[in-house]
Image 1 (cartoon, chains in turn cyan, blue, yellow, green):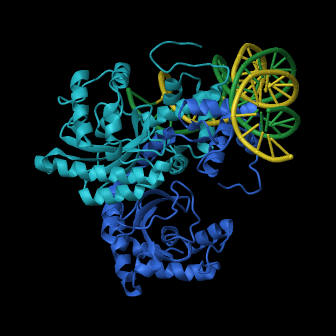
Image 2 (cartoon, rainbow over the protein chains, first blue to last red; image 1 turned 30 degrees about the horizontal axis):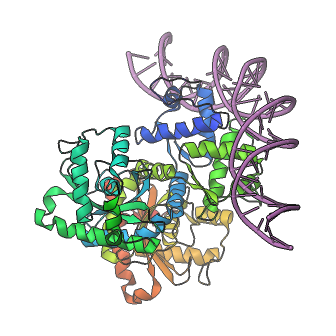
Length: 278
Length: 278
DNA sequence: TCATACGTTCGGTACAGCCGAACATTCTGG
DNA sequence: CCAGAATGTTCGGCTGTACCGAACGTATGA
């Protein structure tokens, strides 16, 4: 039951359905596995169940299209029904459907990859991505909780929080170096965030991936809380340093337009309130 | 989905897990429901199970992020984990990740919405969509099996099949009118497909939605079979009729580039073989 | 040729999933 | 302001199903 070992824990709460939890873990295993799929035996081993049980789960998922049975060959990959559900999920998030035209515009204008993240308990979760014309494709997964301290969107979100909240959040996750430029010290991060606050946008200067930079700015919901952030991503060498501020203002402007659509206050109208927080 | 009768049937095959099947149906119900979610009682009614059972299922899905518990308020919507899984699913389809840059280019060049569909047993399933700059956003769901006879991508796929196969497929689905322009008669459809075959691209002229047109062309996998189709979608009035052919050639060219990437033959090299089929 | 992997089928049994009843809580309308 | 009906939640207990292990046929490689 309560195996505390490294892997996922079997949380056998009374109000949870075991076979469903297993089926979900099965999908996660397929998702994290190689793109060309895994065999049934592989899945059974990874899931820790017998082959027959795994087969029953996989069959059930496959008949609904959540898994895809690519026979012959390695076997199971994720199915097209997940594309459908993911697409609908993005539309059910109000922000997703509202932002898409703005992202297209922003990607077209900046020739960079534009993204939008929602704020999930202080963590950024990117829910939409639009590649700019001719832009290089980056490895930018959607729908995942990212660490907040090493991305422009994440830092923009952090910048709306109080010092205490920021310290608490960083205490949870720790500040792990992802490149040589990652800020791994809370005080430096706070300085950096103060700068972002005064500029109205946050910059990720090769802190998440070598040679890649991002610029992000937050938008606010009707209740005044930080709802998320938009950001653009590009190759460091493509943009002269003196144009960074101009780009920041552009992103800031798009974020304000999102705020307006959501019925929230623009950043400039809030700036005082944010800086006044303890 | 393919619910023939009113409600889905409880297919209790030996090799299927009931609770998992129910959980999946629960997600489908949430997906097909209103964007702002449904209450637990609504879900229980729609699923035909008791509230306690539904709660256990929903809780299990929610703890994994597949469902989102938007409290307070109507309650359950699809969760961000589905965005993640859907994104990975698109990347696990080889065509998805390969086509995206081409779609961006195509959308940028034509100023229209570009899409790519894979061929799933003769039916088109759109797996990727890139909106062009300033293009109107259409209701274009991803990951769904669409009817083949009323879309450019679908007709392009049909055009690679034999008359017997086409008749069989149309017999399955029937030819239902979606607008006043939909082709509802098999012989007319065959004529239309012959035209598409000779042109190298298929046209949907307001046959799926009033005022909307599409142009699509097929690409081929390494084994020579039809792997899918790319298409562009726009507003009928925006394009003068005499430019239709030019647009078709453009789409044809992009489809050929996909074929090359997949290691398949270009359309022109196959045309003879296709027309020679019984 | 054998040996070892694979996916699949099937019985039997323990236990997990399911329902219904009863609970607290919020919403609705008179 | 209160009655009534909706909601979400908890719990006991029986039923039946989800699970495992063993045995099957088949594909792959030594």
